[in-house]
Amino acid sequence: MTRSFNAQFHCPNCKTWTTQETLFGRWIRNNPDLDSRLGYAVIDQDYWIHRFKSHRGRDFQLIMLVEIKTQGMPLSQAQRDTLHLVNQIMRNRRQTPTKDLIYQAGQSVVSAYSTMQGKHVLVRAYGMHVLTFSGLGPDDSDKITWDHHVIDIDRLTALLKFDLDPDTLKPIDLRNHHPPKQVPLFEEFAA
Image (cartoon, rainbow, N blue to C red):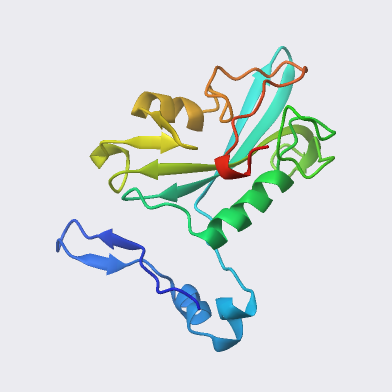
């Protein structure tokens, strides 16, 4: 059964909690033809992070998807499954699947046409990552985790700037060589 919507925000003016569901989200949730018992999982996307970077004369577009969980909430089973599929599909650290990158769908696009630049650009897709706050965000959280690894605000900023590799939490390396072993996003699926 489609679960009730529980994402809320705290209004700083009136100090009350209010649902953050959109009218479209409410319509989907209340549509009996789209009930989860019929096999549907509808998941919103939180943040696409996209950055242009240059390395030794080569230009890169770096991209990843970040799912935000607040108040320490875990992913639901449906979210975990859907986001795990998305994670595999959008990775392209290598053109062929390898044991070093546990979850990849297979050959992926390594260049795509940029409408801003008016040309094909190299794209490094770093998949799906889960950012969890013990509070509602970085400023009110005692604990921040990135794919189950405790991090601080400085490390979070470096990850979002693509100064750190979102898979390894080490300095990003844009050289054209085999990447280091990926830290699995979904540990229970690790081989």
